[in-house]
Each structure stands twice: as structure tokens, then as C-alpha cells.
Length: 148
Image (cartoon, rainbow, N blue to C red; front, side, top):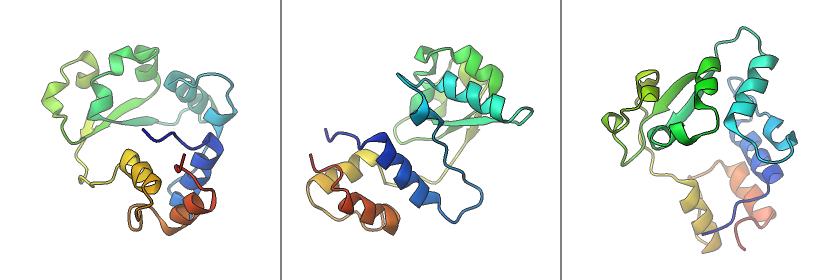
């Protein structure tokens, strides 16, 4: 398995990926937090930064299958609407938990792009063109990320 890039690099790549789209904003609240960063901490901080806002947490069906093991899942649901997108190999009907009943399911086009595959391709010196935005590809190569 190829190791992850440092958090600051992942944040910069996210910034490049959404740059120019006014519907997205990149936040560093998880990076600024010391120690482990749990979803409940992020959700609580976002709720306090945006009082009264209707917040949604988008996760994949694969994450929903394990949501009951997350730290404070009931508290998360008290602050956000859980929005679940389909993931290859995980059917909606497989998630029969109370959390599935409280979730909004959204079908999204399945795109055969995975971060694991991108990291593996970089390590093997294969092209990632068209799999990530050009600025992200350039940044990965400039910073020599995922080469171990």
C-alpha cells in the first residue's frame, strides 16, 4: 500500500481540484486540530461556525455499513443530514441499520477513479492524466508524492 501524502499536500490538492468553482470551499479545521480528528468534532465545529445552516454529511454506502462504529454516530445525526451515495459493490438494501432509515440516498454516476489506484499508478510511474485535474497532477509530480 502506498502511503498518504502529508495533510498539507492533500489540502493543497483539494484546493487545486475545486479552484474556480464558487460552490466549494476548502477548510483546514481538521488539519488545525491536534491529535485524531473524528467526524463528530468536524461536524460540531462546522455547526458552530454556521449556526442555523442545514448541513449534510456525504458518505458512501461502504461507509454507511460501518457508521455505527464511528465515534458518536447519534450526535453526528443530530447535527447533519446523512447523505449516502452509491459505491461499487455495496447495495442500498445491504444497509439495514437505523442509520440507513434516517439517511437520504443519492445515486451518482459511477466513475472508475479511486485514490488508491491513483497513488498506485504514481508509484509505478504510470500516467494519471484525466484522473485528476492538471494542477493536481503537476503538484503530485513537483512534490514527488506517492513515490515512497
